Image (cartoon, rainbow, N blue to C red; front, side, top):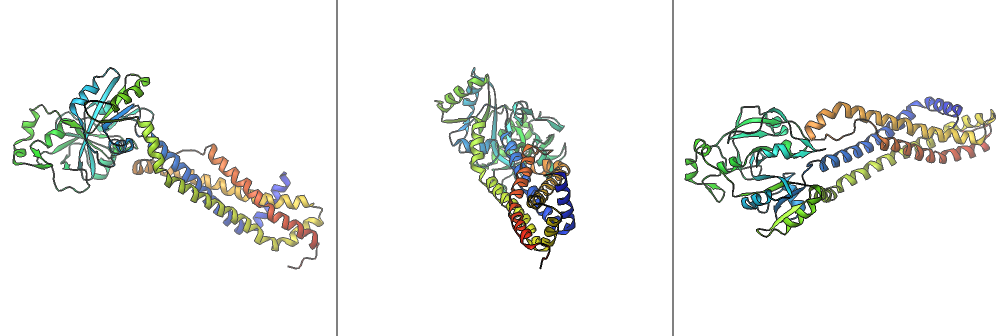
Length: 422
């Protein structure tokens, strides 16, 4: 396309500016939706895969690998059984284990899951690109009844440092049994991570044992009232079991051997999974929805392209005299052909670039809200190669669709001459 043809196509579109504007808006909306869905899909997958980083093996009671990852990492579902404390101690002292962090689940606070663990949790739990947990305010637990809150938990419940809270027994959102005789004090609030840690309530393993002292079959007995916080602070509180263990291998090459040994552990039936492998399997299960969204957004682009074709076709009858005049002024058939194809391509190109501009302007404004509210911290900040490829692809397809009205206009201009009856 020469500069003269493009200039003529732009003037022609300007002469029909209302129709052209509506077509451009439809293409912009289609590109906005398609690229937004792809951006969200990639951002969600990246955030999903980076939920846990630098942990080589997760160990729990024997079940499915996906179930173990769901309840230990994503706080979804209930564990089938626990790992004995003796097994944890033996595993943590293996030569091929650099560190082992136990976690204990089974309690909640207003629907947010309680994680019982050790201070090593804040040292070894990493997310994204091996990023450590950081405190927005306060510090890790020191006293038996200290609690650290995830960023989302603190924000949504309105907690500040020094406030008191009580835990509830069970993993359901509604609990009728509360540990109200043993209140906790908020000593730390974690910075946002974009992971399920943001929805956590973190206490020590000793605290989990303390609040269940004197309990039987999930219910308190009269003896539990004798276990006052003052007495419990004087006791050595060692758990009988834990829910899962996060393990870092002493060398990455030892991970597979460590997993194999733990899966055939003789003392009790255990399940050892490599998080990266399990997360990929889990994503394949949950990615059906994102594929459906991509298909829907592709259909939206198809509708926008059909809109371009319809716009040009409906205007052909009104432009028959225009085409005839152009032919009388010396325009050849290829000029008429190129003009209409150029109009279709320009409509798509302008609409596509407008869609990208609107999308990334929106993301630039809404990014802080999306990161905090929906844990989406892996969204693109600027258009990438894929985005421009989509725009160029749509422009090319629009140009191909423009061939149809161009052929029709070419045939009409040859037969109409200058005496056009419209």
